Amino acid sequence: QKPFDPTKKTIAVLGSGWASTSFLKSIDTSEYNVVVISPRNYFLFTPLLPSCTVGTVDVRSIVEPVRFISRHKEREVKVYEAECKSIDPVNKTLTFVDTSEIKSDEAEKTIPYDYLVLGCGSQNQTFGIKGVEEHACFLKEVWDAQKIRTRLMDCVETAAFVGQSDAKNEQEIDRLLHMVVVGGGPTGVEYAAELYDFLKDDLTEWYPDIAGKIKITLVEALPNVLPAFSKQLIDYTESTFKEQNIEILTKTMVKEVKDKEIIVQQPDGSMKSIPYGLLVWATGNTSRPLIRDLMAKMPESQTMKRGLLVDDHLRLLGAEDVYALGDATATKYAPTAQVAAQQGKYLARVFNQQANRWKLEREYDALTAGSEKDRLARKINKLRDVRPFHYSHQGSLAYIGSEKAIADLPFLHGNISAGGVATYVFWRSAYLSNLFSIRNRALVAMDWIKKNVFGRDISRE
Ligand code: FAD
Ligand code: NAD
Image 1 (cartoon, rainbow, N blue to C red):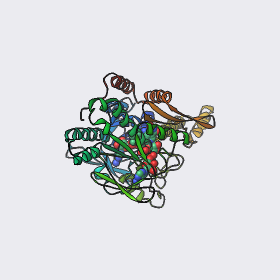
Image 2 (image 1 turned 180 degrees about the vertical axis):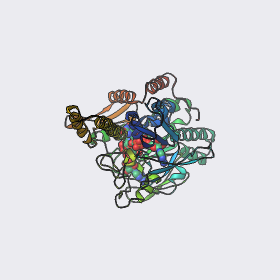
Image 3 (image 1 turned 90 degrees about the vertical axis):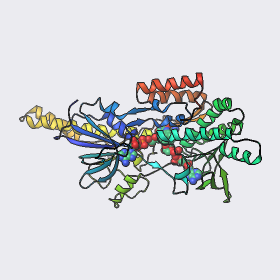
């Protein structure tokens, strides 16, 4: 690999998620130094994260280290496992800290950048509802899935431990075995579906005395789940959940979370307490503190609380040489992996086009006047024309349990909706082929086979 070159421009990339990883994969480092800063040193394939909460798939099978990509680059890429704490868009510097348990004496660094790529995603939305942070489990990162798995098995084992002889204990067992999911978007639905499969395939066999008492409830503030899917698939999901005994409470808004119960406002406006053992919170995204802090530095241009505003070339409004992608932005697109990955690839192409232009400009300067110089001038001019980002929607997929999936797929100028077992086969093959590496594909395929042969592991994490 070529070494870091101080005469080249430096691109600082924040994050190692869908947007930044896609950028890193496609960027040509011959003309740039690249520095990646992310608090986790790996890429996570989020679409299969709900499967990790019950052990259908192992978390190790869906992650790949950032260095797996960076080591194949033409020029050395610096990778820091650290959290960016502040950005100074005027002086073009950023400060990051090592937030791991093991730190060196120099735990904080400030570096200059020529270009900054913001792909640091979003954080879980709580709407400031009291008690969510303290008592609920989120589902965004590897450690969230591990925490859910541990909590779930804790609830089941504790329920098995509690004697069932008196009515008070009966009530406590019912509470422990009540798994509540808040948010009927794709994250909440897919988690409830995976939990149902675990209950039906494994817990029923391992815990015959109590498995029948396990109850799954999905709480959604809107009139239906999966608002982004077509009506037909919403109905199909709701009827499948009904068959699976997953209770859906629509038009029901969680107002407060306590350690053993949630307080909800019901459709008629009245308040109700719902006891729970495990609470999974999946009510969408909001901006990270780093992003909010950056917005506050440019209040005239950054007016959306939801995320960063960019132009159609993904340039951050109000700052020079800063680009923002994925869930960190507020655009007309949904905050999905598909959008983030396409944006990352697009931006790398923009940088590669600029690098090609610079190479040709150097050749141009070295030539004396003549037809070759004119030809180069035309080529250089063409490379100055940078096309805006264009999103191509490949469709929406979600798993709904019992080996059924739903899909809304674009077809000609319309849309095809499909749901059922065949769609599940399609869902599986689509995710398998989209996984990051051959290693990931092999591991996930083996996890699926392992689950079919031996069942899921019920040991606590
Ligand atoms: P992320 O992938 O979240 O990456 C953000 C990165 O920034 C991370 O590496 C993080 O560690 C890093 N970071 C955080 N703070 C800092 C900081 N201060 N400094 C530096 N780096 C920082 N979308 C789909 O299209 N299809 C699906 O099937 C699908 N399934 C999903 C399932 C689940 C459970 C979840 C949670 C999401 C799912 N999504 C899906 C949505 C998709 O994961 C997101 O839209 C996508 O991850 C956004 O990519 P991103 O790169 O913007 O952010
Ligand atoms: P979301 O924003 O899609 O859904 C959150 C849901 O929570 C909403 O329906 C909202 O009405 C509900 N809600 C909010 N506050 C509530 C309250 N107090 N009480 C009850 N309900 C409440 O969030 P998500 O499911 O985490 O998805 C985030 C993004 O990731 C979306 O863009 C989604 O498309 C994407 N994603 C996609 C997939 C997939 O394609 N399979 C899977 C997961 C996530």
